[in-house]
Length: 157
Image 1 (cartoon, one colour):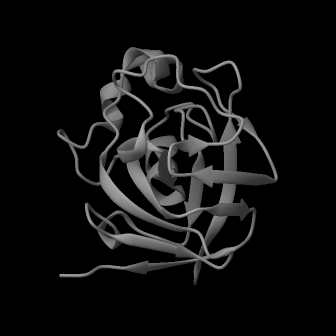
Image 2 (cartoon, one colour; image 1 turned 60 degrees about the horizontal axis):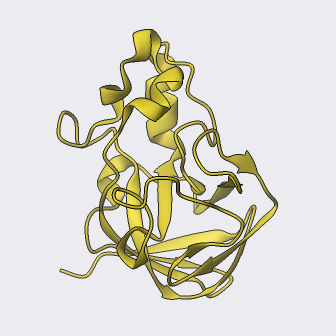
């Protein structure tokens, strides 16, 4: 199974949930049509794009959490990858030519608590479980992402 883009999400008013779009422009400073209300903790070049793996979302759903695409603020939902496939420094190269580099985990906060049983948003905490996280990425090569396009991971070690 190859990795591919399953979902693209933005919220022009900021916050969550982020709403589905069919294409997403990504620039060095963020995703077009998306807004971050808390610029101290979100956004900027090192946190320009928020990514989530479908496998992580499915693990959480199987535990009973009502999480769904866009509900935890991710801009890009990727299918076909497992948590160990990416980490800090991994590059994601999309068939459109967009290139992202993982800069770190996206820590959970109370604004996403509706996606979790009893508001337990720390179920998506990299510190508590490195297999249950969202990631922030730096945009190396700008462009437009589309649903269904392929993603290749390059881990340089």
